[in-house]
Image (spheres, rainbow, N blue to C red):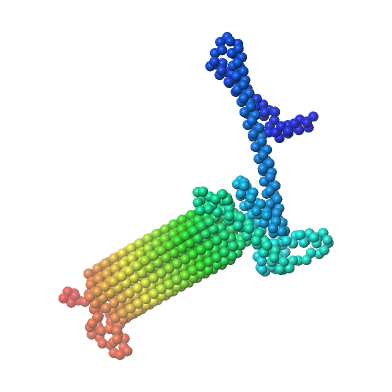
Length: 633
């Protein structure tokens, strides 16, 4: 009894509903519309006592109801027909999809090619199925693959691709009872070459349908929009996604064999290249990364080019290895750019690059030349403990916020000529093995070079220090040139060591100039320098000649306990206040000093002005205050 009833209900459901559904959807609306039409006619048309007219009005109302029922019936019939056709289409698509996937598992390369093209056709004709098709193609490319000619370890357990071509042979051996033989290296290479062509086809299909064309507002009909790629751990051969547009993309642990071209590609979502390997050149020129760009621990064996690339969100290159040249010329980093502990074996080129937020190169190693010429650092620039083995060029670079080079090692020339540091410039404990070039550099905020080691020449000619310049305990092994520099705030060289010549001629010290405890082993030249405020050289040691000719001391000049081993020349120096030189000592030698021709700070003279040392004799004299009568006369 229940079985026929259940079958009847199933037939009704197969037709689109049940009896109750039909009554609710068709009969009730028709009755209501007929009643409404009849009521309206009776209200607005007065039939009087004419029974014939009343009957005609009732006929019109019923006709309206019948017509409405016909329309509803047509709509329901159309809906049922659409549903039937849609179901048939979906079944046909499912059959095509399943068949294409089965073809990808074939042991024949031609069949696998056909499966890929069948999937492409399904996706092209059915936009709602495109992501699924792309997922299948990506899954195929993620399968293990060994390149032709690659070394193949023997007796290695597990499944290794390609095995598809040997399946048929294995089935034949199993059917005949024969013992299957392992394929030869030549056979495996042949299979790998065929599989390589299939994979190139899969890559071309993806590249073809990810290109929007020249006008993104009117993309090509073949363009598949909003596609995600998951090619994690895949082996991709000479991948060319030039001009492609994709959403999220995963290339983590992926191996790129041959050229990898991503020029003008747009990633609208996050993209992951972590631990990927590029075996040859990789190009991302003018690429756009709208989401996060993660390149952590990536290995670039060939050149890596990111010229004019745009990184809208965070760009992570931590611990990445650039074996050859890495080019980021004119690249734009809108968010944080992290290259911490990265290794640049070749040249690192960031000329005219723009870093809008923090740029972090902490502990980064630059083995080749590092160029940041005319680069703009709007956020903090951190190069703490970085190593520059060859030239480091930051000439004309702009640092808007803090620039940190603490404990950085510059083995080659460090060039910062005409650079601009708007905020603090921090070079504490840095090492400059070769020349350090800061000529015409502008330090608007504090410049810290405390405990810095300058092995090569240190050139700060015509540099401008607006705020404090701190060189405390710095070591200048070669020449230190500050000629024409301007120090608007305090300049501190406490206990600094100048082994080579120290040239401060024509330098302007607007605020305090503090050289207390400094050591000048070679010549110290301050000719025509202007000290507007205090100039302290107390406990300073001048082993070579000390030249203060035509110097202007407007403020307090102190030379307490200073030692002058060579010639001390203060010819035509102007002291607006009496200088202090208590316990200052001067060594007299025949070839170094003639007291009669020497001049001392205002208010001081040698205590034995007419001493004449004998050959080989070393005589020290002290500076003593000049009596007031002599001073005023």
